[in-house]
Image (tube, rainbow, N blue to C red; front, side, top):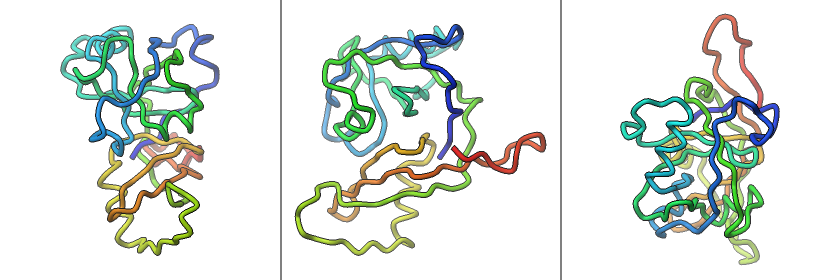
Length: 191
């Protein structure tokens, strides 16, 4: 898991921002609902990477993008129409994105993203009001969480969902601490 740098200004005002605008849509299939990834057409994916100076974008299976202050892992798929961005319902709610809304995606270079040292998360049932409670064994949940979301990026207040043994869980990132990568860097960076 990784932590992106926090942007200091919106993409639309940044002179060096590498961005494209796509229209928010549903995911192209239910099989992608719990990946915490967002999806676009291959042509849009290559366009964004080329704007970012990537010479051979077809060789990259994914990239990191900032959308309304949250950082997501984005993958291309032929199942998305050009000009559309596939997000799950939780991602849209978290970032306050409406269906068919134009969304600016800003490329986040991988070299600027640090591995995570730790995450502080809150767990809740995805669907409230059922009157049920769920006992979660953290020793079993943590490896499953890491396996499902390894290599992804998170920011505080970001939401994600996981199907944990038939129970839908909603996670809220409360705090993300990046690893120390060089002697010049502070011990850790709280995001």
